Amino acid sequence: MDNYEREAASLGLQRFVKAQEPLYNTVLKELQNGDKRTHWMWFIFPQIDGLGTSPTAMLYAIKDMEEAIAYAAHPVLGARLLECSLIVAGLNGKSAHDIFGFPDEAKLQSCITLFSIVSPTVTVFAEVLSKYFNNEKDQRTIKILHGYRS
Image 1 (cartoon, rainbow, N blue to C red):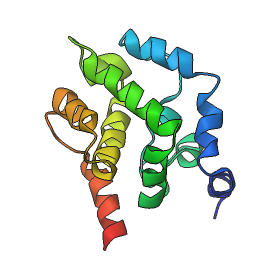
Image 2: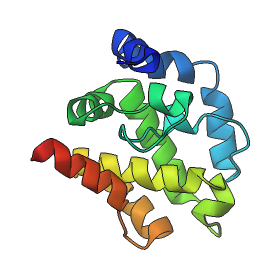
Image 3: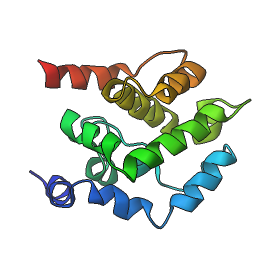
Image 4: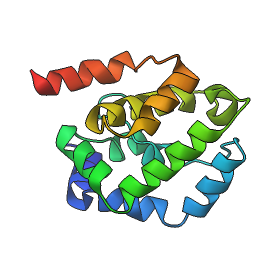
């Protein structure tokens, strides 16, 4: 276990709450404007562990299905993920690349894929996949999740 994995394990979901707190209003404004400008993708739209390689990506990676389920059910994190996803789904006339740029558009697809699987009854995730990714889930995320189910 490296330092980032130890830190993530010791903080649990609180690592996301702590990271989001000072920036969340900025995140909402940027999303409402359809123009992400600052650095928050890792902890607002987190991906499954195994995709990102930077220290920040590893710190904020969702470690497994159980953590993804807990994130979605968390009263703050789940609500914020839903709110941000609804804003993105409601934007018109822009692609994911226009809103997020590279490589964050791919991170969005990975995150939304993860939570569409974890929370299949939450329709906004399917809406985002449909609107921005032609209903295509991120195959790397699916491959990693398939490993958890084997």
